[in-house]
Amino acid sequence: MLGISGGIGSGKSVFSRLLSFFDIPVFDSDREAKLLYGEGEVKDFVSTHFGTEFYATSDGSLNRKAFAQLIFSRPEARALVESFIHPLVKKRFELFRERQQKRWIGLESAILFPSGLDVFCNAVVWIEAPLEERIKRIALRDKATEEEIVQRIKAQEGISPKEQSIPLFKVNNSACSPLLPQIRNLLESLNTLFEQGYS
Image (cartoon, rainbow, N blue to C red; front, side):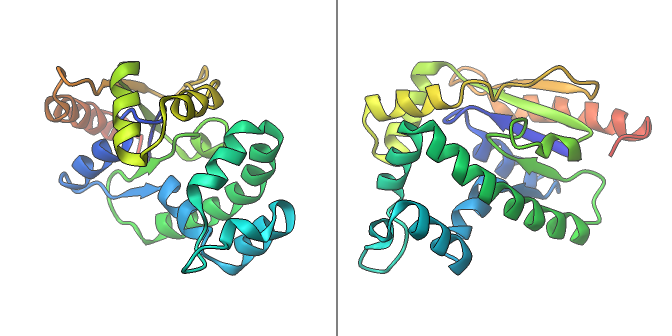
């Protein structure tokens, strides 16, 4: 199992999509968490604890921008949401893992370590990128202001790799560092780990 993590805007999703071209399926925990917000159990949780106005949209979906502003500005709100969402994401991951028959599968999560998902991993890739590039990517993707982006980045302090016994690989996803050569080097290292009994 290969963990894939990094701060917001570092390029985890791009990295994971490229891995899939090399026949490594990746579970995107952040995407799965977003899907959960459209389901009854999570809708009820959000409405009960934070108000029904977050689903007062034309199609009844979550107002993600407003909800993000809430949880990134209130640490206690974010902690409450994460305590509810994380176990649900783990259940989805376990179902995904049971269906795979590959040498390696990926587990992508911005909060791989704080959420405890790293316990499933035999190796971890940490994606890095310059702060300026990350801010530009997030602004383009989320149409967020620089103040909102900085707030989100600060909220992720403490997500970086903790001391561990499993192998850790760092990937530089800056504009001047192409990903494909780094992925090829990573795959060579993973094949070596597989031969040593990791998977």
